[in-house]
Image (cartoon, rainbow over all chains, first blue to last red):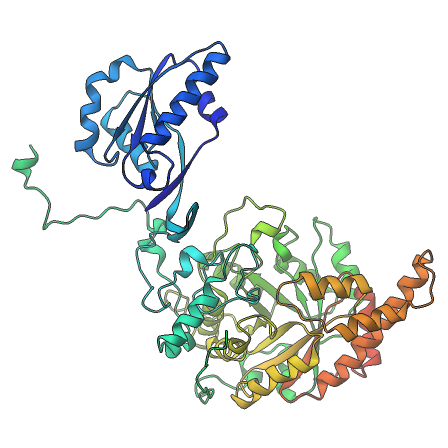
Length: 228
Length: 339
């Protein structure tokens, strides 16, 4: 899932300066599951903003709604009906959600209430960890199901660096050395030959380095006539 | 975790010429001759005056075969290793330029190294680089386009096949660097370390310089594996050594530096050096510590020299470059051979 966390309240208030009435929009997918921008968080943030701006003497009316997925047109299109009465829309979606709203409603100020962090999963209750950077060229079959691109701070492809100790990364004592686990898994899975192979320089053109990315699937694209 | 690593034997080297034919550096000649090599280190200044480089370089005159010039070491911005390397060269010492994968992509690396070679630099140490979070620009974006193994492979192909990383031909021939890497015999997973050294040789390293070695029993075990695998026949292992300056430094290295092993008897020996000296007499204690540090370093070099598969020592002063001459002298490494 996409994992995000809420911006500090003061930062959000700064963004909202000059607004009298805003619509806080949650998202029912990833950010609901990671407790950052679902219905519950929209309620808490909206109440906090109402109280805080009221105490400041510049009360903002914050109304709430949550859509199933901010990143799909069919779920956000119905918001248009009442949008005119708001000075701004405060999105509690991920960065994709914010941009999806901005594309759908040009001319309307769409403000991000979250910082989108990474693609990952909860490793325990209340802890989320990054697992994928979307490099566009997956190597998990070679690396025993552990990603060196997203989990090794030096993005090594040829084994652990000299700073791996007791299975811990030198960059952060709270982080496992990804390559320690990769070595263990590779041995267990009979991938010793891959371990000893000098893995060639990665082609990053499939990553963000190659420019803005898009996927075109002609097989499922709608014919021009239906688009119209 | 005690994983089972399969047996490994280094494949025979069929495509790389003998070391002296790969590069015409002094270090290559010393290593090819089988003489015990000595390298040192010059850390460039956090500024743009040449004098600190010259001063440090002069402390190594006639003591070393070549000197490493570090590249934004510990991710702290300093004068570029190529520029400082040229100043070192002007002082009559052959530089080993360090370059990390942290600060440059493959375009910048190849371009800067074409330039470095054109200006007379002949030895290169290919490193991943310390993470920028511990340096003085923690908000910097890191690069890591390629890793240190891929870096070695790229430079080997530039030298031996005259091609850029992309496969295009280098008109007029590629830079003929003697290629080095780093090795830490004490990092984890411990069993992996001899294999990693083998991999560096396979990637293209002619030599490695190790992390500081204080734990000789552990290092001997490592070298036995390296020799048994046939790795030492194909890569020159230059062992990192350095004088301890105090009990505190020994303890810090033992307890706080990831991937470092300092045995307790060594810490106790440093402590013993100041026994009976009043804590208030700071200068006396420092002198006693430093004398003991040099003595230990000399003894360790003599023991390291006797280990099968070792090709030399890399003496690191760690902001105490004055110690390198007495260490080299005391260990019987002077005068350096002229080859």
